Image 1 (cartoon, rainbow, N blue to C red):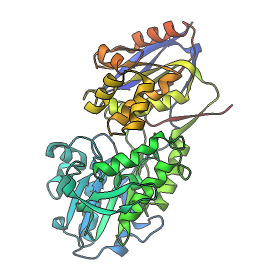
Image 2 (image 1 turned 120 degrees about the horizontal axis):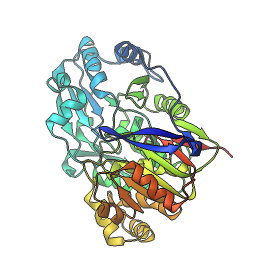
Image 3 (image 1 turned 90 degrees about the horizontal axis):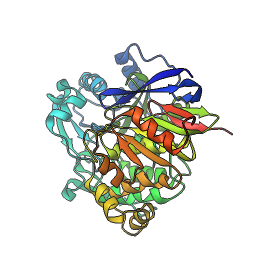
Image 4 (image 1 turned 60 degrees about the vertical axis):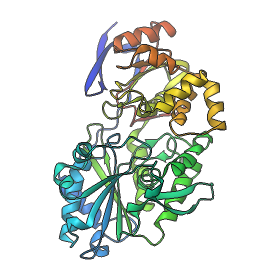
Length: 426
C-alpha cells in the first residue's frame, strides 16, 4: 500500500486526505490550458471582434446610455478585472460615467450591501457608476414583456428598459437546469421578478432539462424565449470570459447573446467535460472552495456532477464549508416539513416554490447514492437535509464512506466539482 495525500479546496482554505493511490481511479482536472497573459488586450480584442454582431465601437454613439448586468458574489467571472477596462473603453467612445449603471443579477439570491458590490466590480468602478441590486420581490421594479410559449410571464428589471445599450456580463459553466449558465441567464433569471423566476424553474422537473443540454432542453429554450421577448428592439451585447479553477482568464466570448453563447458552450463542454472509463465506489468532490461552497444552495451543483462519476449505490463525499449556512430558509423548511425524498418531490410538484426547489435537487439523487458532507455546518443540520452523515474532517469522511462500501473501495477525486463534468464512456 502506498499512501498519497490529496488536497481539495474548502472555503478559503483546503482539506487533505490520504488514500492508497492504487485505489484512486482518476483525479478529474481540467486539461492544462495556458491562461491569457494580457487580459486587457484580450478584452479589447473580444469586444472589437465580436461573434454575430457589430462591435461596440460601431454601435455606441457619444452620449448613449448603457446598463451593465454583473454577477453577484456567488458566481466568479473576473468582474473586478474586466469592468474597469470596459468602462474606460466606453468613456473613449463618448459615454460618460454618468450615463452608465450596473444591475447585479441576483435572481432570487440575497441583496448585497455596497461594500460587496464594490468588491465585485472593483472600487474604481463602484466609485464612478450607480449600482443596483435586482430585488425580485419588489414587483414595482419590473416591466412586463409578454408570456413565453412555455407559460412563463416575462418581468424584467426596469433598469434594463429605456437604455440605449445593455451589456450582459458573466461567465459560462455547466448548469444543472439550463444546460449552461451565462449568456441570456444574466437577464432571466438574473434580473427577473420572482414569478418569472419561479415559473421558469419549474422545468427542472422535466427529464429533458439538465447539465450540458441545450436545444432539446425545455428550461434552456424557455430562458432563451424569455430574453428574446425582452430584447426586441434593444441593443444588447454579451461579454462572457471563461475562467480556469484559479480564476484566470482562458478565453473571452463577446457579441450576440445567442451566437456568442453557443460558441462559449462548445468551448466549455470541451474543457470542463472530463472523460471517465469507470464509475467509482466513492467520489470525493470539492465545490472548488469559496464562493462555490458559500452555502448549501450553491453547493448542490457539485452533488450532481459527483453523481455522474459514481456507481449506483456508491457514496459521494461533498467538500463544502458553507460559511453562510443553508442559503435559503425555504430549502430547510421544505426538508423538515416533508421529511422524505419522495415527499419533497411530491410537494414541489403540487406547490412549486423557489428555495423549495433546491430541496428537491439536493435530494433527488439520494434514491441511488449516499451523500456525506465535509462542512462547517452542524452534523444534525446536515442529517436533517437527508445526508447520510457529516463531519468537519475529510479523512473522517473517507472512513465513514469506507464503512458504507469497503476498505478497498475505488475512489475518484474531483477537486473542482462545480466546474468539471464527468463524461462516462462505456
